[in-house]
Image 1 (cartoon, rainbow, N blue to C red):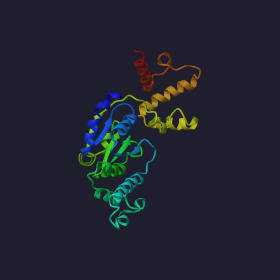
Image 2 (cartoon, one colour):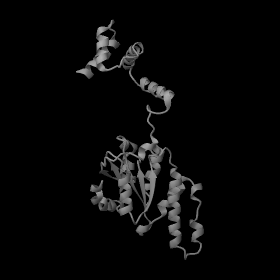
Image 3 (spheres, rainbow, N blue to C red):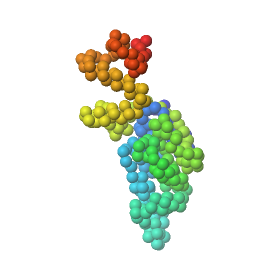
Image 4 (cartoon, rainbow, N blue to C red):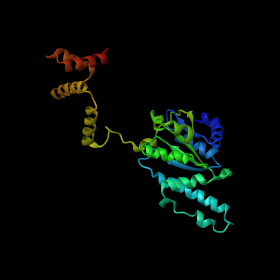
Length: 266
C-alpha cells in the first residue's frame, strides 16, 4: 500500500483541478484513502461516508456540509450587519434541491473552504440505488466540493451514465489493488449458509435450488434420493460414480449426474 504514496501529490492536483478520484482494484481501499486524506488533504475539510453500512442518511450528510459552508461564510462576513440572519437556515428541514442550490452558490478562492467527500464503497448497498447516486453526483458538481471514492463491485461502472461520469463526478480512475482484507466492510455481510440456524439454512438452500434450471434441479433430486437411502455413505464423485454405474435404471437425470461425477474424476 505504501507504493501508492508517490501518487498522492498527483491525486491532490487532480482534486484541485475539479476531478473526482475513483479507486478500484482487489482489496480494501479504506486504509489507503484515509491515509491519503490525513497526510495530503490537510487543506480540505474531509467528510467520510461509509458506503458499506446497511443504511445512510445522505440528506443529513449534505445538510451538514451546507451548515459548515454557512458557518464559514458567516465568519468571513461577521463585520457585515444582517448577514447572519440571511445565512442561518435550518438546513435539515429544507428540501434536498434547496440545499444543493445553496451549495452551488457558495464560491470562494480560499482553499480552506474546500470540502472533500471521502466515500468508502460508493457502490455499497446503501448507495447503489439511482436516487443516491444522482444525489452524490449533484453534490460533486458544487464548486467547493470534491469527491474521492472507492469501488469494489465488478459492475460498479453501470451505476453511472455518460453525463454522470464526464460532467458531474468527472472521475479520474485509478487501479490501486491493495490485496488488503475487507475486515471492516464485511462486518455487515453475514454469512448466508453458515449462520442463522437450520431454518435460515433451509430457506437459503431453497432460494438456490429455485434459481437452477429444471435439469439441474432433477440432478440434485437424484443426488438427494441417494443420500436419503444411504445416510452413512460419504458422497464423493467416486462413490457417486460407483453407485450409479452399479445401480439399475438409466434415466436422463442419472446419466447427467454420472457425467458430472466423471468430470470431477477425470
